[in-house]
Length: 251
Image 1 (tube, rainbow, N blue to C red):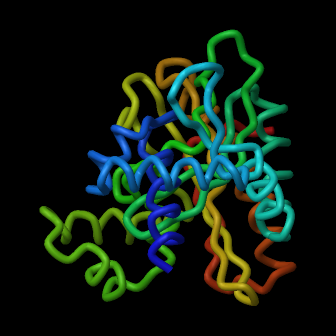
Image 2: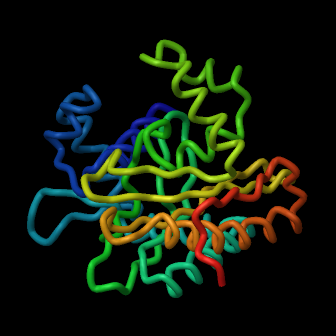
């Protein structure tokens, strides 16, 4: 099991803003002897989990990881249906969209749809964000009880403020993030779940902060919300809350 754990730790390195890694960096990050790190990376190359970049000594995830990621997405009906909603919203408004999952205190996109507008947010799939400081993360945290959030965020600097923000998400049915993780970028998100599999995903659209009015923002929220509502109705997600919109431009 130690080898499997070490291999998993190597793969986790790629989820922290790192696209490639060397034996020396694995040694430093994981605290492994250099010879052990070298043998581990070779074993991972041999089985297709890693591959080297050209003639360099840098390693990146192997193509087997792409196959596994695709298999994961296709195995979940919720992810597939959420992807359809986000893709349709991206096509209509031209802004980049994501479907994201929460992993502990972090959230990461597992499907992305690049926008078509001339000025748009560049897709950055796989980037891990702090759940409490992102619209996607807050929509997923809001599905938890306050007690569950308090346990997860024990020692957090301002837990009462976080709980208040999550209550606002529960009331309004969506979350907005304004230049929290990326300067000049705003995001809107809505979460939906499949009670049968205990999966929850967040549907998100991101866009340049200065280009979208509150009314236009609510047009996007409305489209995401209608798609999420249909998913919730078909899967029996009783915890889903339709978004409350104040600025929507009349049709």
